[in-house]
Image 1: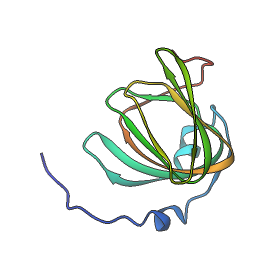
Image 2: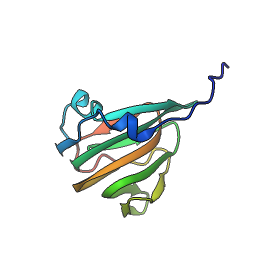
Image 3: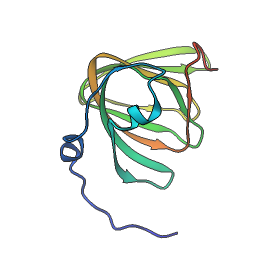
Length: 132
């Protein structure tokens, strides 16, 4: 396995040229969503991303590992579907959570949020009402 040289990443500088994804909807085209996110670093199983958006994301899950989600600015409700039902977390700037491997989850940020995630790949998406 090859190892890349560790490096410091300026998150604000990486975010500065990117648009805020306004009126995000579960059916927003992938390229439009991707344009609002910076790929900050590679990890063994995926990458670290940061981006800003308003609205609601599609359901997503990561079959190959847990996802770390940290809110850098703004606020979001993160709904995680668990075996015992939906868990809704309100995350504000300075807060983080771990989304368990394989759990469907989505973001709702009507007033806007900037998130940093360490996301294992691949990511599955769904626009179903309940993707389970």
